[in-house]
Image (cartoon, rainbow over all chains, first blue to last red):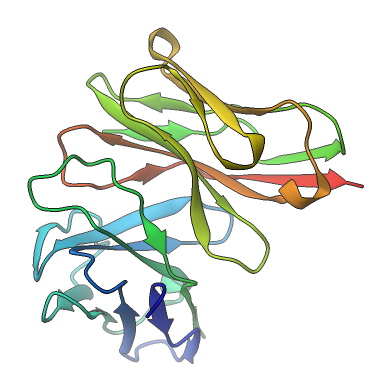
Amino acid sequence: GAGVSQSPSNKVTEKGKDVELRCDPISGHTALYWYRQSLGQGLEFLIYFQGNSAPDKSGLPSDRFSAERTGGSVSTLTIQRTQQEDSAVYLCASSARSGGGRANEKLFFGSGTQLSVL
Amino acid sequence: AQSVSQHNHHVILSEAASLELGCNYSYGGTVNLFWYVQYPGQHLQLLLKYFSGDPLVKGIKGFEAEFIKSKFSFNLRKPSVQWSDTAEYFCAVNSAGNTGKLIFGQGTTLQVKP
């Protein structure tokens, strides 16, 4: 597609349930990022993929959070046993950065998934 | 650890006023610096970036930012704002050699009154 696509755009779930958030990056973009934006907060880095591997997952808040990427394209962020503090907008971004390239490439963001945990 | 601080959380200006949004970062090494903007109902998009060369960087829509290494600052400026500049602005930094992880500030909401 023309841009980064995220689904669903909104997700309401009950505390304790698992959720999956999906990101379709721009075709050909090798780098993919997940960020979280809580109310009144900046963007919090969660994880970075280069291809299918995740060289930096230092931002995942707990072992309830995991992410994978397959075929160098689609990525899924999974949150198990959701808690109310997980409520936030989850943003995905992609860039054309190669593995040996400089870390200055422009990120293209999706519109995010608004997650509400009741 | 790297961090980014944006001093103003909410700025209200009248059209034609000048704008300066503060951004300071903490990191001792070589950095790349960015300003991203999110217009109402739209995606985050890159406004401008600095990674080397002239410390005064010009971006889209008349925005510019100046990298002052001694002050660890990368303030965003525009001489005359328009109503259409109403948006949320985020400063971000990454280290030149890292995996691409951008550290963002808390964001500044700019409201321009017509």
